[in-house]
Amino acid sequence: MSDGSTRDTSIVPLAAGFPAPDRAAWLALVERTLKGAPLATLTRRTLEGLPIEPLYEAAPAAPAIGRAAPGWDVRATVRHPDPVLANTEALEELAQGAQSLLLRLDPTGQTGVAAGSADDLAQVLDGVLLDVATVALDAGFLGAAAADWLGAAAKGAPAAQLSFHLDPLSAFAAAGASPGPIEAHLISAAAVAARLAEPYPRASLFLASGRAAHEAGAGEALELAMAAAAALAYAKALVRAGLPMAAAFGGVTLGLAVDADAFLCIAKLRAARRVWGRLVGACGVADAEARIEVRSSGRMLTAADPWTNMIRLTAAAFAGAVGGADALALGAFTDALGPPTGFARRQSRNIQLVMKEEANLGRVVDPGAGGGYVEALTDEVARAAWAQLQQIEAAGGIVAALERGLIADLAGAGRAELAARLARREVKILGVTDFPTEGGRPAEVATTTHRQGAAAPSPRLPGADSHCPPLAPVRLEALA
Image (cartoon, rainbow, N blue to C red; front, side):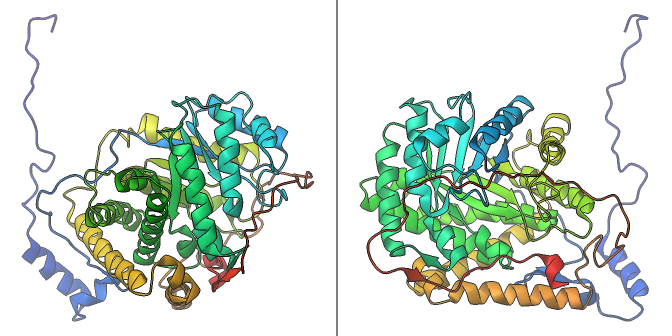
C-alpha cells in the first residue's frame, strides 16, 4: 500500500465463532421439534420412490461429473410459422446474446416454422453464420429430410456446428403411431446421418431424448432410461449404416428436461453422465463424453398465473447450468397460453445470460460434487435408471417397450402419483393451488396469423404403420 503498511492476507473462516456441526445435537433438536413423531416423517420421496432424507453428511471425494468445456450454449427456440419472421427472430436472438438456435419445423405452421424444403430452411437461416452458431433441428418424422436441408444450407463447410437431432423415436412415442414402420424410420435416419457425418465431422447426428416420458408424467429414472435406450438404438442403427461404434455414440446427444425441482434435476443430469459412461463402456467404447441438451419442462408451466412461470424457469435454468448441460433451451413464461412475444423471448434469454455472464455458473465444472445430498441422489437416480434401462432392454429394446406399453405404463404410474400428491397438497403450484392470483395483469402472447402450410415431402415410408400407446403430455395445473 502507498502508506507503507502491509495488507492483511490472513484467512478468516466463515464458520469462526460457531460450534462445530454435530449430527447427534441436530437429531436431539429435531426429536424435540417432532414431539415424538419418527424422524422418517421428514423423509420425502421422488415419484419413483427414491428417498430424499432430511439431512446428509459430506460425501467422500469423487471425480467431478460435468460438461467437458466451461459454460453452456444459450439456445434460443425459433418457431414462428412464417419463415421470414422466423429468420428475423433468429437473427435477433443471436444479436442479443443467444449462442445457438433450436429450429422447430412443422410444414403445417401449427407448432413450428412452416418450412418444407431446402429453400424454406435457407430462408430461415439467411444471415446466420453456421460455422459460428450451432443450429439444432426439431423436425419429428421429417427429420431425415430436414437434416439434408440443413446440410445443404451449410454448403459442405466442415467447421459448421450442426445438430441434426434426428429423433424418430420421440416422434413415435408422442404420436402413438409412425407413418410406416418405425424400424424403417430408424434405418432411413441412420443412413442420412452416416452420409452427413463425413462432410460435417463436428455435427451431432441423433438426439436420444427422454423428454416425452417426462412431459407425460414420468419420474427421473424412467426419463433417463428412455434416453439411454434410445441412444443405444440409435448407435446400433449408425453401426449398421457403416459407422464405427465409437463414432456412432459420438454422434448421439442426450435430451432431457429440467423443471423447478432444481436439486433433483441437478442430480438427474449428473446421473445421466454416469449412466452414459456405463452404457458406452458396456459397448466397448472408452472416453466418449456425454453431450446433453436440456429443455425446460412444459408440464410445470401454468396458464392461470403465467408470471409465476418466470420463477420456475429460473429454477430450471439454474439446474441445467449447475447440473452440467452442454446446451439449454429455456421455454417462454407464456408457453401455456400461446406463442411468445419479444418480451417473453427476451426474459428466457436473459435468465440464462445473467446466470452465465454475471453469476458465472458455468465456470465450475461440477458445483454439486462433494455435497452429500447431491451425491447420494445422483447415485440413487443413476442406479434406478440403469435398472429401468435393463427392464427396457429385456423387453426387446426401446421400440418393443414402446409398442408393448411398458414405458407408457410406467409414465402413467408417475402421472397418477403426481395427481395423488396434488390432491393431498404434498405438491403445491404457486399461483394455482397456493396463493392464486385473481385480477392480475394478463400476460400477452404473440399474434401469429400466418398459418399457410408449406409443401413438404411425405415422411411416410413403405410398410404398415407402427403403433404404441402415446406418451400424451400433461400439465400439473390440469392435474390439480
